[in-house]
Image (tube, rainbow, N blue to C red; front, side, top):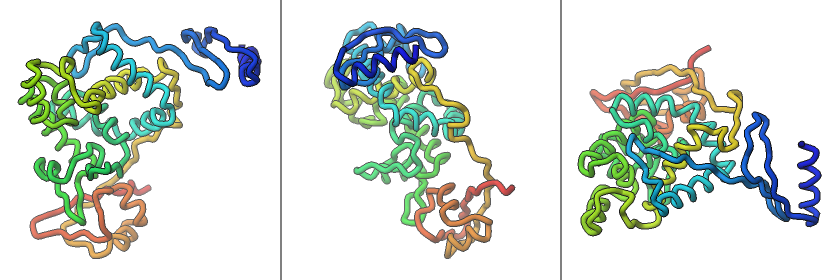
Length: 304
Protein backbone atom coordinates (compact mmCIF):
# COMPACT_ATOMS: atom_id res chain seq x y z
CA UNK A 1 0.00 0.00 0.00
CA UNK A 2 2.77 2.45 0.93
CA UNK A 3 4.70 1.82 -2.27
CA UNK A 4 1.53 2.37 -4.29
CA UNK A 5 0.92 5.67 -2.53
CA UNK A 6 4.45 6.84 -3.19
CA UNK A 7 4.03 5.83 -6.83
CA UNK A 8 0.88 7.94 -7.06
CA UNK A 9 2.54 10.85 -5.31
CA UNK A 10 5.38 10.65 -7.81
CA UNK A 11 2.92 10.92 -10.67
CA UNK A 12 1.17 13.80 -8.97
CA UNK A 13 4.39 15.70 -8.30
CA UNK A 14 5.25 15.27 -11.95
CA UNK A 15 1.90 16.73 -12.92
CA UNK A 16 0.73 13.48 -14.50
CA UNK A 17 -2.56 13.02 -12.67
CA UNK A 18 -5.06 14.11 -10.05
CA UNK A 19 -6.33 11.18 -8.03
CA UNK A 20 -8.94 10.53 -5.36
CA UNK A 21 -8.79 7.39 -3.25
CA UNK A 22 -9.31 5.95 0.23
CA UNK A 23 -6.48 5.29 2.66
CA UNK A 24 -6.48 2.73 5.43
CA UNK A 25 -4.57 4.04 8.40
CA UNK A 26 -2.28 1.81 10.52
CA UNK A 27 -5.16 1.02 12.88
CA UNK A 28 -7.26 -0.02 9.86
CA UNK A 29 -9.63 2.93 10.08
CA UNK A 30 -10.65 4.29 6.73
CA UNK A 31 -10.06 7.97 6.23
CA UNK A 32 -12.55 9.30 3.72
CA UNK A 33 -11.40 10.51 0.33
CA UNK A 34 -7.77 11.39 0.60
CA UNK A 35 -7.39 13.75 -2.33
CA UNK A 36 -4.09 14.25 -4.05
CA UNK A 37 -3.66 16.69 -6.90
CA UNK A 38 -0.82 18.61 -8.45
CA UNK A 39 0.90 20.86 -5.93
CA UNK A 40 -1.22 19.63 -3.00
CA UNK A 41 -0.62 17.52 0.06
CA UNK A 42 -2.93 14.87 1.47
CA UNK A 43 -6.27 16.21 2.58
CA UNK A 44 -9.18 14.38 4.15
CA UNK A 45 -12.77 15.02 5.03
CA UNK A 46 -13.60 15.53 8.67
CA UNK A 47 -16.54 13.71 10.21
CA UNK A 48 -18.02 16.09 12.75
CA UNK A 49 -19.99 14.76 15.71
CA UNK A 50 -23.77 14.71 15.36
CA UNK A 51 -24.20 16.26 18.79
CA UNK A 52 -21.88 18.41 20.84
CA UNK A 53 -21.87 20.45 24.02
CA UNK A 54 -19.82 23.05 25.83
CA UNK A 55 -19.82 22.93 29.62
CA UNK A 56 -22.93 20.74 29.45
CA UNK A 57 -24.76 23.24 27.22
CA UNK A 58 -25.95 21.96 23.85
CA UNK A 59 -24.46 23.32 20.63
CA UNK A 60 -27.25 23.61 17.99
CA UNK A 61 -25.38 21.90 15.17
CA UNK A 62 -28.67 21.34 13.33
CA UNK A 63 -28.56 25.03 12.39
CA UNK A 64 -26.64 25.45 9.15
CA UNK A 65 -24.62 28.53 10.10
CA UNK A 66 -23.65 26.99 13.46
CA UNK A 67 -22.45 23.81 11.75
CA UNK A 68 -20.46 25.78 9.20
CA UNK A 69 -18.76 27.93 11.85
CA UNK A 70 -17.82 24.81 13.82
CA UNK A 71 -16.67 23.13 10.61
CA UNK A 72 -14.39 26.05 9.78
CA UNK A 73 -12.57 25.94 13.10
CA UNK A 74 -12.27 22.17 12.94
CA UNK A 75 -10.48 22.35 9.58
CA UNK A 76 -8.30 25.28 10.65
CA UNK A 77 -7.08 23.49 13.79
CA UNK A 78 -6.86 19.96 12.41
CA UNK A 79 -4.73 21.13 9.47
CA UNK A 80 -2.66 23.66 11.45
CA UNK A 81 -0.38 20.81 12.37
CA UNK A 82 2.58 22.57 13.99
CA UNK A 83 0.29 24.61 16.23
CA UNK A 84 -1.98 21.76 17.32
CA UNK A 85 0.90 19.33 17.88
CA UNK A 86 2.68 21.81 20.16
CA UNK A 87 -0.54 22.45 22.09
CA UNK A 88 -0.99 18.72 22.61
CA UNK A 89 2.60 18.49 23.86
CA UNK A 90 2.20 21.37 26.32
CA UNK A 91 -1.20 20.16 27.49
CA UNK A 92 0.37 17.11 29.11
CA UNK A 93 2.37 19.38 31.41
CA UNK A 94 -0.16 22.09 32.23
CA UNK A 95 -3.72 20.78 31.95
CA UNK A 96 -3.61 18.62 35.11
CA UNK A 97 -2.94 21.76 37.19
CA UNK A 98 -5.53 23.85 35.34
CA UNK A 99 -8.14 21.07 35.51
CA UNK A 100 -7.55 20.67 39.26
CA UNK A 101 -8.16 24.37 39.88
CA UNK A 102 -11.24 24.47 37.66
CA UNK A 103 -12.66 21.60 39.71
CA UNK A 104 -11.83 23.33 43.00
CA UNK A 105 -13.59 26.47 41.74
CA UNK A 106 -16.64 24.59 40.39
CA UNK A 107 -15.98 25.81 36.87
CA UNK A 108 -16.56 23.29 34.03
CA UNK A 109 -13.47 21.50 32.78
CA UNK A 110 -14.19 22.66 29.21
CA UNK A 111 -12.80 26.07 30.13
CA UNK A 112 -9.29 24.67 29.90
CA UNK A 113 -9.76 24.94 26.13
CA UNK A 114 -10.49 28.66 26.54
CA UNK A 115 -7.13 28.98 28.26
CA UNK A 116 -5.51 27.21 25.32
CA UNK A 117 -6.98 29.47 22.63
CA UNK A 118 -5.96 32.49 24.68
CA UNK A 119 -2.29 31.59 25.05
CA UNK A 120 -1.49 28.23 23.40
CA UNK A 121 -0.20 27.35 26.90
CA UNK A 122 2.88 29.52 26.37
CA UNK A 123 4.17 30.84 29.69
CA UNK A 124 5.35 34.17 28.29
CA UNK A 125 2.29 34.79 26.08
CA UNK A 126 1.64 38.50 25.58
CA UNK A 127 -0.71 40.24 23.18
CA UNK A 128 -0.08 43.50 21.35
CA UNK A 129 -2.74 45.12 23.52
CA UNK A 130 -0.85 44.21 26.71
CA UNK A 131 -2.77 41.12 27.86
CA UNK A 132 -0.40 38.56 29.38
CA UNK A 133 -0.08 35.05 30.74
CA UNK A 134 -1.99 31.82 30.17
CA UNK A 135 -5.33 33.58 30.65
CA UNK A 136 -4.34 36.81 28.90
CA UNK A 137 -5.38 39.27 31.58
CA UNK A 138 -5.07 43.00 30.99
CA UNK A 139 -3.29 44.72 33.93
CA UNK A 140 -6.39 46.46 35.27
CA UNK A 141 -8.56 43.35 35.10
CA UNK A 142 -5.83 41.29 36.75
CA UNK A 143 -5.71 43.71 39.67
CA UNK A 144 -9.51 43.68 39.93
CA UNK A 145 -9.32 39.92 40.49
CA UNK A 146 -6.58 40.02 43.10
CA UNK A 147 -3.43 39.56 41.03
CA UNK A 148 -0.34 41.64 41.75
CA UNK A 149 0.96 43.49 38.69
CA UNK A 150 4.10 45.58 39.30
CA UNK A 151 7.49 46.01 37.64
CA UNK A 152 8.92 43.27 39.88
CA UNK A 153 5.98 40.87 40.23
CA UNK A 154 3.36 40.11 37.60
CA UNK A 155 1.05 37.33 38.74
CA UNK A 156 -0.65 37.15 35.35
CA UNK A 157 2.30 34.83 34.62
CA UNK A 158 1.63 32.75 37.75
CA UNK A 159 -0.29 29.78 36.36
CA UNK A 160 -2.10 28.78 39.55
CA UNK A 161 -3.01 32.29 40.72
CA UNK A 162 -4.08 33.43 37.26
CA UNK A 163 -6.27 30.33 36.85
CA UNK A 164 -8.04 31.05 40.14
CA UNK A 165 -8.57 34.65 39.00
CA UNK A 166 -9.96 33.52 35.64
CA UNK A 167 -12.40 31.23 37.46
CA UNK A 168 -13.66 34.17 39.49
CA UNK A 169 -14.21 36.18 36.32
CA UNK A 170 -16.03 33.33 34.60
CA UNK A 171 -18.29 32.59 37.56
CA UNK A 172 -19.22 36.25 37.84
CA UNK A 173 -19.92 36.41 34.09
CA UNK A 174 -22.06 33.28 34.23
CA UNK A 175 -24.08 34.70 37.09
CA UNK A 176 -24.82 37.87 35.11
CA UNK A 177 -25.35 36.27 31.70
CA UNK A 178 -27.03 33.00 32.64
CA UNK A 179 -24.99 30.44 30.71
CA UNK A 180 -21.42 29.21 30.57
CA UNK A 181 -21.38 29.68 26.79
CA UNK A 182 -22.14 33.38 27.15
CA UNK A 183 -19.56 33.59 29.94
CA UNK A 184 -16.98 32.18 27.53
CA UNK A 185 -17.94 34.76 24.89
CA UNK A 186 -17.71 37.48 27.54
CA UNK A 187 -14.12 36.51 28.24
CA UNK A 188 -13.39 37.85 24.77
CA UNK A 189 -16.02 40.59 24.38
CA UNK A 190 -16.58 41.65 27.96
CA UNK A 191 -19.71 41.15 30.03
CA UNK A 192 -21.02 44.65 29.29
CA UNK A 193 -20.53 44.17 25.57
CA UNK A 194 -22.37 40.84 25.54
CA UNK A 195 -25.23 42.23 27.65
CA UNK A 196 -25.62 45.14 25.20
CA UNK A 197 -25.61 42.78 22.20
CA UNK A 198 -28.27 40.57 23.80
CA UNK A 199 -30.46 43.56 24.62
CA UNK A 200 -30.07 45.26 21.23
CA UNK A 201 -30.73 42.08 19.26
CA UNK A 202 -33.49 40.83 21.57
CA UNK A 203 -32.06 37.32 21.88
CA UNK A 204 -30.93 35.23 24.85
CA UNK A 205 -28.06 32.97 23.76
CA UNK A 206 -24.67 33.14 22.06
CA UNK A 207 -25.69 31.16 18.99
CA UNK A 208 -28.40 33.69 18.08
CA UNK A 209 -26.10 36.71 18.32
CA UNK A 210 -24.59 38.60 15.42
CA UNK A 211 -21.14 39.52 16.72
CA UNK A 212 -17.86 40.99 15.56
CA UNK A 213 -15.65 38.54 13.67
CA UNK A 214 -13.36 37.72 16.61
CA UNK A 215 -16.09 36.98 19.16
CA UNK A 216 -18.17 35.20 16.52
CA UNK A 217 -15.32 32.70 16.07
CA UNK A 218 -14.21 32.63 19.70
CA UNK A 219 -16.47 29.94 21.17
CA UNK A 220 -16.17 27.81 18.03
CA UNK A 221 -12.39 27.82 18.37
CA UNK A 222 -12.88 26.47 21.90
CA UNK A 223 -15.28 23.81 20.60
CA UNK A 224 -12.87 22.73 17.88
CA UNK A 225 -9.97 22.27 20.29
CA UNK A 226 -12.21 20.37 22.68
CA UNK A 227 -13.20 17.94 19.92
CA UNK A 228 -9.69 17.48 18.54
CA UNK A 229 -7.93 17.19 21.89
CA UNK A 230 -10.55 14.81 23.28
CA UNK A 231 -9.72 12.32 20.51
CA UNK A 232 -6.47 13.35 18.75
CA UNK A 233 -6.07 10.09 16.85
CA UNK A 234 -9.43 10.63 15.15
CA UNK A 235 -7.88 13.69 13.55
CA UNK A 236 -4.52 12.06 12.75
CA UNK A 237 -2.57 13.45 15.70
CA UNK A 238 -0.68 10.50 17.15
CA UNK A 239 2.03 11.41 19.65
CA UNK A 240 3.85 8.92 21.82
CA UNK A 241 4.11 9.59 25.54
CA UNK A 242 7.82 10.24 25.05
CA UNK A 243 7.03 13.20 22.77
CA UNK A 244 4.75 14.95 25.28
CA UNK A 245 6.08 17.58 27.68
CA UNK A 246 5.75 15.98 31.09
CA UNK A 247 4.93 17.65 34.38
CA UNK A 248 8.14 18.47 36.18
CA UNK A 249 8.83 17.51 39.78
CA UNK A 250 9.28 20.67 41.80
CA UNK A 251 9.78 21.97 45.31
CA UNK A 252 8.90 25.34 46.81
CA UNK A 253 10.75 27.90 48.88
CA UNK A 254 8.87 30.51 50.93
CA UNK A 255 10.56 33.91 50.81
CA UNK A 256 9.83 36.39 53.59
CA UNK A 257 12.72 38.82 53.04
CA UNK A 258 13.68 40.89 50.00
CA UNK A 259 16.16 39.42 47.54
CA UNK A 260 18.51 41.97 45.98
CA UNK A 261 19.89 39.65 43.32
CA UNK A 262 17.82 36.71 42.08
CA UNK A 263 20.71 35.27 40.07
CA UNK A 264 22.73 34.92 43.27
CA UNK A 265 19.68 33.52 45.08
CA UNK A 266 19.27 30.93 42.33
CA UNK A 267 22.86 29.76 42.80
CA UNK A 268 22.32 29.28 46.53
CA UNK A 269 19.37 27.04 45.64
CA UNK A 270 21.46 24.94 43.24
CA UNK A 271 20.05 26.32 39.97
CA UNK A 272 20.84 29.16 37.59
CA UNK A 273 18.88 32.34 36.87
CA UNK A 274 17.39 30.89 33.66
CA UNK A 275 15.92 27.91 35.51
CA UNK A 276 14.62 30.14 38.30
CA UNK A 277 12.79 32.37 35.80
CA UNK A 278 11.54 29.37 33.81
CA UNK A 279 9.71 28.06 36.87
CA UNK A 280 8.68 31.51 38.09
CA UNK A 281 7.87 33.69 35.05
CA UNK A 282 5.96 36.02 37.36
CA UNK A 283 9.30 37.32 38.61
CA UNK A 284 9.90 40.17 36.16
CA UNK A 285 13.17 41.69 37.45
CA UNK A 286 16.45 40.47 38.89
CA UNK A 287 15.27 41.36 42.39
CA UNK A 288 12.27 40.77 44.63
CA UNK A 289 11.05 43.26 47.19
CA UNK A 290 9.14 41.63 50.04
CA UNK A 291 7.23 44.11 52.14
CA UNK A 292 6.56 43.60 55.84
CA UNK A 293 3.95 40.90 56.45
CA UNK A 294 4.18 39.69 52.85
CA UNK A 295 5.72 36.47 51.53
CA UNK A 296 6.22 34.79 48.16
CA UNK A 297 6.42 31.12 47.23
CA UNK A 298 9.12 30.39 44.67
CA UNK A 299 9.05 27.13 42.69
CA UNK A 300 12.26 25.27 41.94
CA UNK A 301 13.18 21.93 40.39
CA UNK A 302 13.07 19.08 42.85
CA UNK A 303 16.51 18.22 44.17
CA UNK A 304 17.77 14.85 42.98
